[in-house]
Image 1 (tube, rainbow, N blue to C red):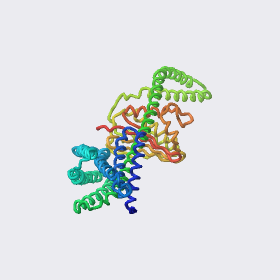
Image 2: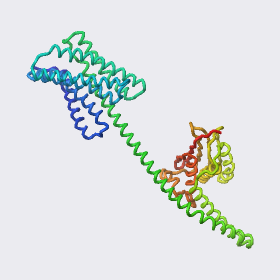
Image 3: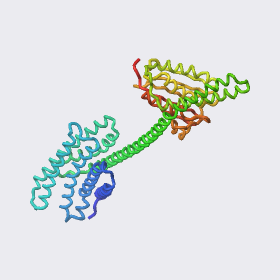
Image 4: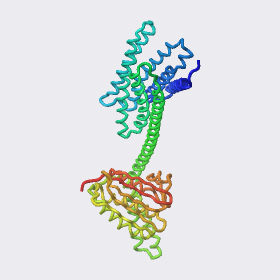
Length: 461
């Protein structure tokens, strides 16, 4: 007896789902623990749907008629497995639902499926015929429950989709197709009785399983993205820890050496200044050069002391507009000598708590770096504005810029792009901003320019 091609296609589709479920069950052994429950639920859903399609197809009943009782039993067992498995997967994706209704539905379905399974086992082993009672509980009553379950899950899917959950869109599309097919078959069954052939639910199952697989794939991708993000944050924290350790070492070195070195320098400078006053004109040039170098050395020592002890002695409420105008006035002549222009744009009413001299020192260091980075004519834009609960100072230039390697080393001890630079200026700037509970961030592109952004908590005037 030949089997229609459409009936054979049902068997092939069901066999494919069953094979996929076996592969997924094998893969379960290699998955992380936190993903196993959702994977197992999807495996049970796919496997149950495969068995339903295989045992519903006339293919088995035509060529293996003597095992008809086995196919019917497998169909019922798969149905008893599918309903709680689908609800369980829904719980894993969307949670327990409002008032834990989805979790309670899962518990009720699990108990009801177990009772039906026990009833089926008793009938199979004892050979007793309770077909009428069994048919009532596992077909009519279970069918009603399936309709209610489908309507409930569809409602939850729509609510999740309204909340703009992308997974809800995917699930809703697949589940709507399954629900539409299943509801159509069930309503036709209740209308025409046992003579109705269930057809539409098969294609709904195919669409639904595809949507579940897409959702699970998206969940794994999100998990991978979270791992990558965690790795990046861990690397950032590790770099910050290394930087803090370096800063601590330099701080201890600066605190122990700077005071001992500064005093002899001041004494030496005083005597050289006296010698310069009494020396001849030819010698004064060399003595003045020596004094300039001593002043430079003294400035480096001052930077060491500021770095070692960045605490703000006198903390007052500062008007950033006034402070930045003062800094701009100081540095404008230097910028003009280099062919640059400083543009200041400030918002009114931006106040922070800090020390005026230390803030100016930090900003001057940054603006001087921008001036020195200009090649001929250039523009340095300084902006001050509010961003939520922070005051933001942006210093941007169109100078030579830096590559990623140079940018990552900013603030490291003794790193500088200048020929005679020590790197202490930026180190001091970092410490001052940190002492004011602020943050500093740099962005730069080679040949385009650099921007330094300082964020400091706002204060009330």
